[in-house]
Length: 394
Image 1 (tube, rainbow, N blue to C red):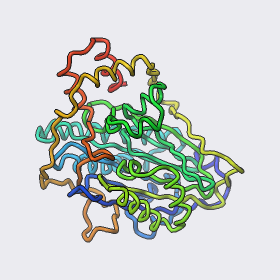
Image 2 (spheres, rainbow, N blue to C red):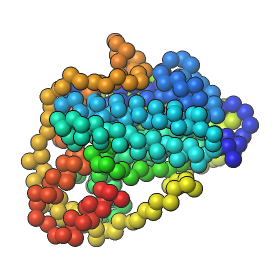
Image 3 (spheres, rainbow, N blue to C red):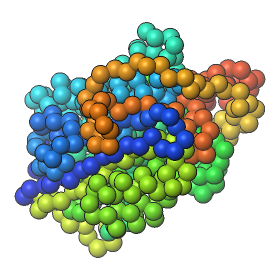
Image 4 (cartoon, helix red, strand yellow):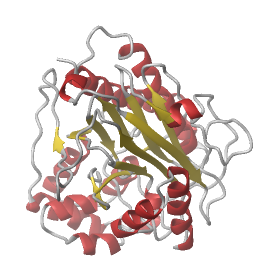
């Protein structure tokens, strides 16, 4: 059954804008984003995409935050957005099936293809070994939003004026919160809050978290890099979205607040408002309900991680000297060409460019490859090592 058949009859109108900023401490911008009408494959922020009626192939919104030193992060995030769009163009837009299951499968496959392409690029270019990028990819079809998550860029949904996080960070701190070892408040101030467990590129295989939820009339989706989410709380997002009905203004005000709070990293935000009679209005006090989604064609199992396993990983981390991890800041003037992300603040039409991916406090964000180096240099229990490898590869 086509996903659009589950929505009420009538038009659905998507209003969207995106913006990126280098921040206050970085010299370059390694973030990248893309907005696309997948039916027409128009991937700009020209007026026909900034307000469009999604066709039978839906819409795409994606934020990628590159890392790896030199220009590697810039290359990784640009490759990620380029490959995801290309894969959806060649394997989804012209596919015979157009149902929800096929769409979700195509989004996950495109994410995995981006991982493979970045990983191969790093193998072919040893100077960029360890390069990677986060990816938060939202596909909208019918009245449903599908999100593929790798890393710690985030998605929020504002409904009834209140923002709710709809993605889960693939980070060490999130695992500790899930295991009951830390509260969310403790995780926010931890010195290890910058450690992510996955990114596109460092490993040959990647585990993509896929969730879905129904969209209601008036919902506002916010996708962002951690340069934004790390500098504010959800009430700040709610307030700015509520006070800024114009999405261009909302993006500007979110970036301005992140910069006012220090702007230690690149800041990227996409804002999407869903309107039209084709969407049901939210019921009174209806919260955002996002659920894990497994396409019928996907039989890959998942396994829970226990608190004991997370504690072993923490013990190994305590034994490691994180200050010894090298970081690179030298720019390499190499940039792949790709789809323009439509950043209207730039003076030239180029793919969005680089920046060192660091934490809210300004410290280095550690990639999966760097974590493996740490654990390889520290004597820890064999069991802890096996658990860590499992966490990276599950």
